[in-house]
Image 1 (cartoon, rainbow over the protein chains, first blue to last red):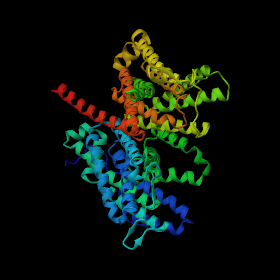
Image 2: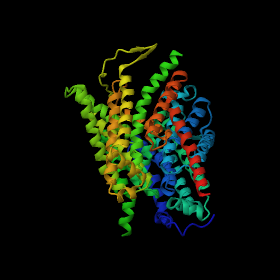
Image 3: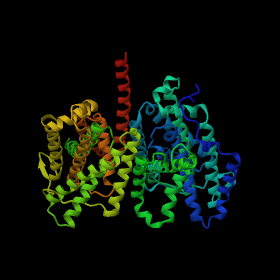
Image 4: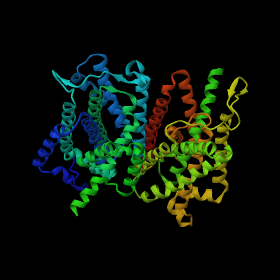
Length: 322
Length: 291
């Protein structure tokens, strides 16, 4: 593939953070379970980690490529259900179910992405929205397999051989460990030729095609890659909560993911953490907010998109650089 | 056969609602290239507003409905002024996220004001079903179908017979040229938001006596309106009407013969198929034009 650097900005400076700081950050995150006062606090942090995994994938699509997918929760759902059905119904090992879930999601994502990548802008957004409503309908409808509206209970905790991730601490490390690995993968991905191609497509699709980027192929690839992030998030979700139901992976979840990304700021791993953290933590810490959650979510989307398209992290970055 | 016809009749009723919402979606898209995901919330808010005016303020039903439609129309204008106008120069995706946010915001406000319980309006002219041949028809269903007829006729007259309507069409056709001959393009776009909100609100007060409406009850209907507008060709009002009626009947037949669980699934499968086919078609036409 051609080097597209001429047209696109340099990778964000956040990706070039010194290695030492990265390790210090990892150590700090790993130490959190010793500081957390109870399992409830941990459970909130674990959910944030699961959202972050899906968000890193969504950011590849939206932040780096400039496409809007409202369907990420659908991929989470497919993986969560495949994992749940294989382990809870057929007694598979979670570790064996996980690759099957990922392959299933890849197949569904290909079905979606191959025609979808020919769509432009909001048509793609509409099609992905349609996709997540279809998956929810199937989770509700295929009762024999999915348990319908009551979902599937009794999903076992994730385990690797005799190592069972049952406690809050173990799950915290599992989820945030996965997240850390994905941050590393994402970092390498966005600084690769593919990452350059994504940014070029975001800036100008026609120009990207002119300099020899196969726009269609790149879009399909990024959709497939992002769907794997969602699949990991979905399977981990089912194993952690030990339960899965349609409303846990419906289009409202998809729109929450978009809100988190817009809030935190696209195209940066810090924005992802900031967005997921704020949207989940603020209602936990400040309880009255609970009732006004929809209003806040809506306001975040409207106000930030109109006045602050870079999100909060974009604001921080601008402050730091000026 | 009677069962089938009964299903089709039910489908035409819900299809009329989809058509009304689809008209709103199409109008806004035609005038300002914005896909308004908050269209369904106009419907829900009008129904809830009318409900409160009837039960809390004890207004007569007709007055309550008229005031609710006026209120929601005003809301549509405010929405255009505060959220769409300042972001005019942004990409369509950004505008889509803004309307998505507005949809969530309006749902949130409705939840705080009206709570989560579903509410219903009294029927306009009783609930005794009329028997037409062998088919039972709710009088409210006739109101709904009458609603789409009246709106279609009114819009046709507006665009064909009035200067403002023609100015709107001109502005949709070619912004720059319309501006040059003195058409206030910005006012036209605002008018489209007002009209859309009014049509959506009308759908809300018409449907509220048939189905219960809750704070989030408009969302799925709004999305179906989207599907209707897409099937009919985004921006084409007769298309939106045909698309809505088609979708309503299709859903009713699926619900009748398969399961009502697959209603939504069917609607959105149709959406994706139409989007993909149209993308293929567009590509071919551009190739033909280019060659």
